[in-house]
Image 1 (tube, helix red, strand yellow):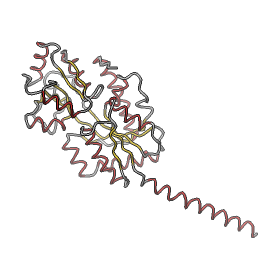
Image 2 (spheres, helix red, strand yellow):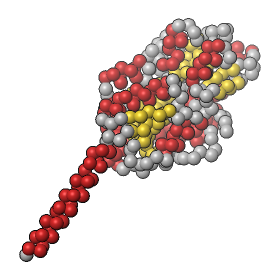
Image 3 (spheres, helix red, strand yellow):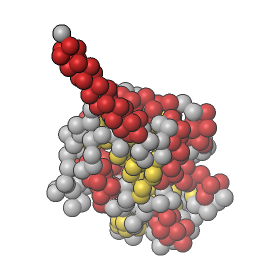
Image 4 (cartoon, helix red, strand yellow):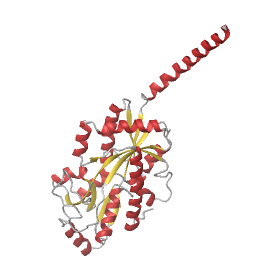
Amino acid sequence: MKTPFRRRCFQALVAASVLSTLAPVYAQDSDRPLRFIVPLSPGSTGDMVGRTLGQALNKTMNRPVVVENIPGAGGMLGTAQMVRAAKDGSTLALVTSTHVINPNIYKNMSFDTIKDVTPISIIGGSPGILLVNPKLPVHNLKELIAYAKANPGQLNYGSSGNGTSLHLLAVMLAQEAKIEMMHVPYKGNAPLLADLIGGQVQLAFQSTAAAAPLVKAGTLRPIGISTTSRSRILPDVPTLAEQGLTNFNLGSWMAILGPAGMPADVVQRENRQVLEALALPEVKEWFAAQDFELVGNSPADASKYLQSELVKHTKLVQESGAKLQ
């Protein structure tokens, strides 16, 4: 009888020893820094969103959050690093609506925008705004279209890069208004804005958040809002739909994604932490000031939204004829 008892005691001690070694590992996991990839240029609206979210997630996740900018190729360079990362929830990425535009523009992507990611949550969305350099003699959409048709091929528009949502907006404008414009892509938003202000390019779409101070200062002239609802921070600027392009209704959105194959419990935990971050008063206030409507939804709903947006943007790109490379 003594032998079984001693054996049971020994087994219990071994089990306790194993658990004691595993428990610290699990506890330390939440202390590991979260690598939060922002595949956008420093100083861009997306970068500011990423850093605001990073600070908030630092609180709700109770762990260090390291925001890492990896711009390039329409956001694909940074997103590709997230896709290849460990599936343990230690690496997430902030993506924009460009994520579902890219498959329709780039032939040789290194990852699948749906199958190779785990949606954590849709963050929200915001409208775009069409801006012109004040030296251009137009003050509304009607005048812009008339000028473009009177000067075919003479208008230059800039974008923050090939295949970005702001680029697609300009392509759609040319298509819907039946005008010709030359595209000048930039590596990021800062050089684009500098040249738009300087007159090297004559027009460009921007986020309303980036545009608001420049519009209010008279540095750039607003032509119209890209969605059917007016901007909350620039309410006096009419929409493009109001001015005649009745089918023009496209904004941009942002989402947090992880690599495919993440454990379900990790996905649910990080979704909860993201929603808690979006509910922080200072976060809600900051996003409202950026003309950004917060969403915050479940991983399942985020997945459905991502797939529906891929279908929507595939149709838009096909209709616009935007085949870039």
